[in-house]
Length: 472
Figure 1 (cartoon, rainbow, N blue to C red):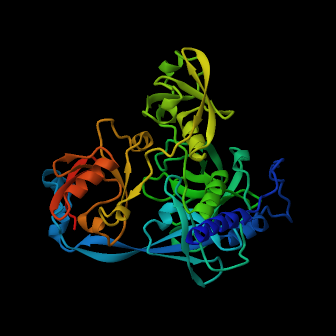
Figure 2 (cartoon, one colour):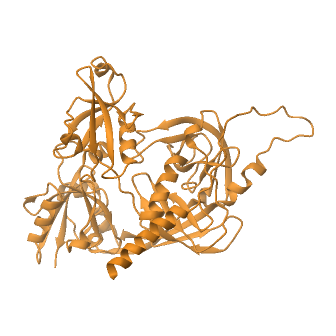
Figure 3 (cartoon, rainbow, N blue to C red):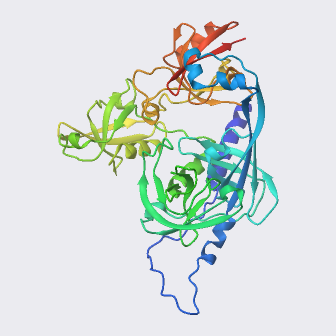
């Protein structure tokens, strides 16, 4: 009976997500130049973006952070000191609350709101304030996807002004756009600019990147807000800026609305994103390499993981992937985004060049080895989530092949892992005398040390750290 109830709840959740209505803006077919001003005419976009402004909310979050209690603690945390000693000295820390501000966009009248993952990351409380209102709503986290820096939260309110989605694949460089958000916590603000560039990747912000670049002023607090066209239709979620001082310098990036729509629907239905995986490490062609291939664009395979789909299909190092399911692959980023948009067990047809000939392979996607493990569920270290180091992770974090271990993907505040000194991004390389190669070897090593204190060695930004861990 319980099994039937669980199945019913899952089915109801998926059905409810499929019933979420995300309004589509009319397909854009024409563009016009600004008309010539007359004495009795003012060129204004006020009415065009009035509704969009009502769809953008302010988000404040509260989280707890650790601070050393004295100057001695600060000395022990100095990287030069820890490079030589490397241990977790157990310096007492005081817990303080930190408050941050960001923005979000209402995507359905039922109270679903999309924002950046980094806006709500590790938050103990999320509070939403609607435009032109002082009423505060406590929001619930529905799901998040750190790899695209997107998250969905929900407030208990109905009949909200949901934004209309534009087709981001149809935007062009030079289009006039508006950034709507909550910069510096001053409240709802609108800035104007143009689309500066499209399909920007390799910025180093997210694992899956396909940014819209704009010169519309985006400042701290704008993260998670809306980038809209002159009709007020959403073309992107403002995510980041490139700046030396932290303020707007005319280089802002937004996640395209097409990606936002796809990710948010999956987060609402499943609470997470489950991506396909083929098991290859890839790169773009260099100018010298292009001389060796008939195709001058594609994703060059530099390594193939044993027993994963690419290996089973016979793909090898040096193959140039040029097409997946009829979609042209022009770069390594194209392949990563296409595969990442598909589900495990999806069947794909992949075309590649080898020795100046075109071949075709049929693959069934797997889940890969980058599925994270919450070690609390396996009675290892409370609050610690880890992941095997996959080719995608190596590429994203620019890790050499010599680095082996498991990566810390999350540390829950106030947990044992937090007390021991783990932080996200640590690479666990050794437990006591045992070398860690993957989740399996880490699990064995940490279980062998139960009931005693041991040193767990982590690589933290290139510096080895020895954390003292005790398992009960």
